[in-house]
Length: 627
Image (cartoon, rainbow, N blue to C red; front, side, top):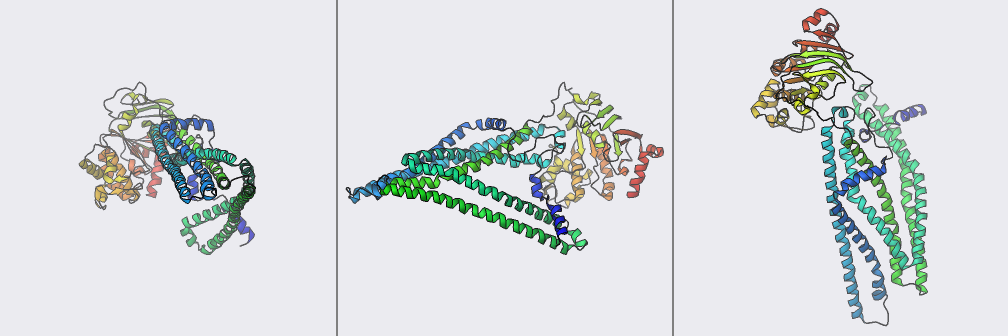
């Protein structure tokens, strides 16, 4: 492969990321109004994050305090067990020749061993208790955090979900909450235990032998500095490895997903060459990174062995000259061997702590987001008949951009109002305002003479049934998904709604009929079948207002014509708003509103607008040719 082609491949895929990596990096909103996780994985406001998280931990203070006490007992008993080797060795292994009685020596040894076993037993028991207590405390904390987070999501306005990616929201429930749980499960106790172990080890080393303890303590910073230097040199190799891995994964994913195109244009050999080049680059980078990673452990281990050897030599000399006992030397060497372990563990756990605090901060961002404004001065309404009036309505999703301009229309109960126009004209925005997903800036919207902002949101939305362009089915049976439109509906009403939506025939052909379980948003159904179930869900609702937002866009023309009669029955006695690109579906509307750039530029019946020969006539002729 020539250098020009190689450079092109590297430039093309140097920023490539696999789908999984992309998912993990989906932090932050679409419009930049959320505080995303920093690339460093650390919280932006450490003190605030800790203070806020402590309020959750405070609920489990008794469990956590008990776990901390158990951890302290475990640490102290472990250190004590190590120190008990000194009298055992001095008295019963390298014993005093003036007391040669074997029976007395074995009896004493047995008693000391029983004491040692008891200390180790306490250590094991307290460690088990500590883990159980922290597991219970952490899970209770996570339950409380997840519950508050989910409850908060139910109170957030639609604007929040329109401006935040679904993957980002889900990551708060999974990645972010899980990192908090990991910290509470193990990290918090390990840090406390590690700190106590270090302090206790230092104290016992200096108590056993000030000279040998000082040697170990002084050597530790030197070892840490050497390890950091080795890691710095390894970072470049790891960066190169990750870069090449990203290029290879990006190329592989793109090629696999576009395999049909590769085969159509007969580029298999070209793809093999490019893959071989990227694979070779990755191989070289991995060899370098793995080599540097491989030598770091042995070098560090040998440096620790050198410290151990120095302590052993000096300690042996002290024993030989009678300045130190053999039991003390054994204990000192044991402490020297284990001294670096808790320090390394604590330093490694700090990364987990920062990640958990950053995750908690992202959860708190959601909890601090403003909820839907509460209804004030709501007018009590027993029912909604469906007389809707919009007068001089202006609206924009942001203050500096107006989407709807001076919208005026009236819909009487039982009428069918259609909205047509090009993409982005503002059709769906009108229906969003009717459901109070957004509140208008200017003008008025009234239902049965009551301003919409004076109607309780819950009551309003119970009286509106919607069929959206994007279908969504929940995990459960077909019957349960249809009944979602009205939970108290009977099985006969479910069947009747399916017949209205022309879904009954295909449901009967499913393996278990209405009891067929749907998973993954109804992945075992076609797009059109999923939409028919959504229409049945709206049909079962007794809501007097019906909104159909491209409801038949996912069904073919034959199926669409087949359900026309059912849709007429569905819309009977309901105030219906229809959004459609297929203008053939709105010919029977009582009034058709033609929107362009947020303005109603034409209005009238199908025949009136065709006779007008304006924008609607152009759209109708264009769609008629396509159909």
